[in-house]
Figure 1 (cartoon, helix red, strand yellow):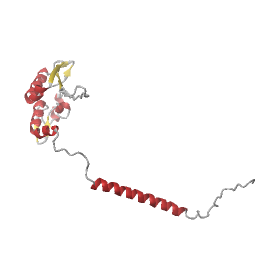
Figure 2: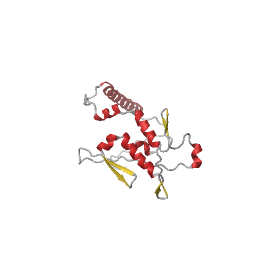
Figure 3: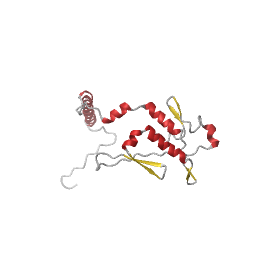
Length: 188
């Protein structure tokens, strides 16, 4: 070999590893474990024992007042009444029970008078309802809440599979039985 170059030292097969290499691996591992443990303990201490710095208002949110006056029993009865009305969807392009939709519209006016007093109502295609609730900020992004009022007809051959008549609207304990109760009708 020319010059002062040294060949890299290579341990022969079966020779012992360099002194201190195991120790340095364990020392690094233990140091890292200790740092992680201390960091976790510090975070837990602050999460559990430091008081919240969030603003605590003594005023109740306006929405809470609505829920305080909400009557769950009335809501269940309103849904049961709406399920008793036959709002069967179109068959061959014709509304099967137009009187059902008109009856449901009247029910809404009766049981939700404040909605009809404060919101703008538009009837679309004779049987659909569109309510507009204008906010105080015309620049705000609008929201859309939607549902449907129609149900598909219950086939006569399937009536024996029903616990109750499809348009019965029975309330038993916490269950309401009727055509449309688990679809979007409850959102109306």
